[in-house]
Length: 263
Length: 344
Ligand SMILES: Nc1ncnc2c1ncn2[C@@H]1O[C@H](COP(=O)(O)OP(=O)(O)O)[C@@H](O)[C@H]1O
Ligand SMILES: [Mg+2]
Image (cartoon, rainbow over all chains, first blue to last red; front, side):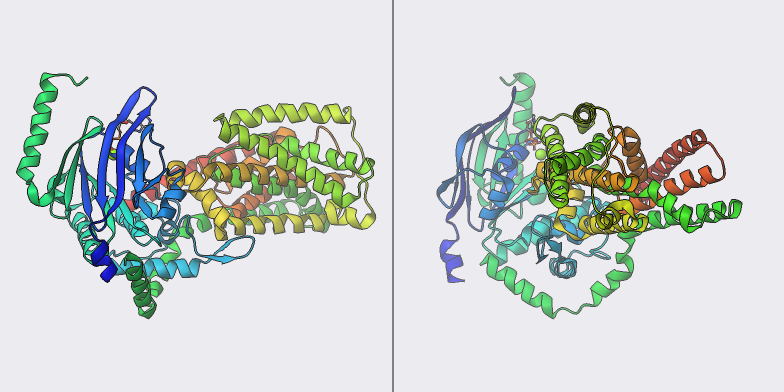
């Protein structure tokens, strides 16, 4: 408890001059950012701005073309998703990375299954089923059963499962949410945002939320970064800005885009 | 802090009543129902066919004919088990029928070189696994579609088998007991078939390997994003499929009493794929069952044998087989459409 208060505000993740190209396409040109413990950072930007690409660099799915990452002030190079997950970075991908053919509980424990052991690595379905059921109830996600395949769920339910999976992973320290409310109705979005709010109060989990609809996440986040044309053009505490200011910036950038073609 | 919260959460969990889990269990089977429904319907088809052929020709359900019937089914069903694993992770193995042919030759030559039977069999299976490894490495590592990789392998192994054998069949060497155990005895062979099907059904649905196989085929990108090494899963399943093909070849060699360089081939491979498809495996990956494929192989064997007994020509069998494959595929497509509609 005391550790939490004293360490809150310390930096957990920092990116310096990150860039990423896919062949001819430059998704990120020069991105620097900081994330503090217990902080909820919103990463805003238009479609194609490079938000998902940045997330995938943080999760070890992509390697940056140049630039460096620091985790707990130590330089890190995540060689794989498993590597980043082991460090405590848990992604919720925009495409959710759920397997339609598998049940809810099997999706929730995918790649960190509870096993009975033995050379065949038998799955302990009973334990996973019970745990998944309890975790979902705890964060207020209602499902008829954790045995239904993902293909039977609505977009919002799927998103909730993907978030729950990440939140309950063992040593999660940084949660990355890529457009968590994109596929959701109002009620479901509120549920996910409430969940993030609750996590913020009860833990020093650091969160990055990628979003497109900034009005929706404005109240939840502590700081806002705006990603435009592959670089961060705006970095301000939520308390020091307003939805109006953000709207002005976005509208202005549209005007500029109309007048001058970006190089 | 986060962690301690997590533990608190789990502490509370264990106190929670198990009621909702119970409530789930009635609905819980729903997910698996589709597959079970499929399996039940193929089983029903098999039973109807048996009744029909028994009615038209009383010779059908004799011990002798059941022996003949199992000859049609065992090797196909064993290969189908491997093919199901490969199909579920989204790939295809066209070369397994040639692995079926070459493996007993490897065994035979190893014995000729003075190795004992057991070692010779293991060596044969190791070579089969290596062929699967090459299939997997080229497909996964070089990004060649498995259709092309294994098509190339099909011709390569076929030529290799004919080269090392000189084109002539040989006789497998084993004592009476081992010959019987290794497929010489009809019921021994059936036992192998059922045991292998059950084992792979178990692997598919109760082990981490099976889970990752389904995940790899169901959502390749998602599976790799979550950290599953989908390449390894595919390579492993190519190896398993190849080994099962080789083992089926060994069993048939002892059953027939001859190792033929032209045995198996594309015919047995396509029969295995047909069994898998009739058994409900989707070529798109992500879903299928080994038991379904076993039942599919049995249905095909019953049809083939039943037609032979009632004097219907092999050509008619091929026509029926063709129709059966397409009709099952149409049913599969419609089932998934129904499923998709139920979801929204
Ligand atoms: N794997 C990839 N290969 C090629 N181009 C990509 C890839 N991923 C993203 N891009 C490109 O990079 C740019 C940024 O994409 P993305 O990060 O998905 O943006 P956002 O999430 O902000 O909408 C886009 O132009 C996109 O087409
Ligand atoms: Mg995106």
